Length: 125
Image (cartoon, rainbow, N blue to C red; front, top):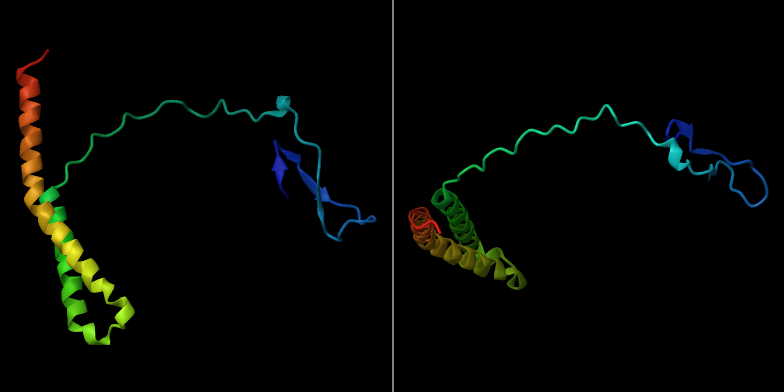
C-alpha cells in the first residue's frame, strides 16, 4: 500500500458501475498540517574536499593511445568494414589528431596559467 504521512493514500475501489475490478482510488489529499516531522535530519555538512590535481599529460596521452589502437585495429580490418561504416576510421584519425594537439598544447597552457598566477601574487591590487 502507498501511504502519505502514515495514512492510507489509496484504497481498493468498490466494484461499482464504471470502475474496473481491482482499480485503486485516491483518498483525499493530506492537509498541509499533516507534514512529516524532519527535525531528526541534521543540517551539518562536511566541508567540500580540495579538488584533486590530475596529470593532464598522462590523461591526454592515454586517450590518444586509445585512439591510436582503435585506428590500428580498424585499418587491419578495413576490408571487412562495410562501406557506410568506414567513417569510423576517420573518427579515429580525428581523435588521434586532437590528442596530439592536446599533448602539445597542455604544457603550454599550464605554463601560461602558472605565469598568470605568479603575476597575480606579485602584483596585488
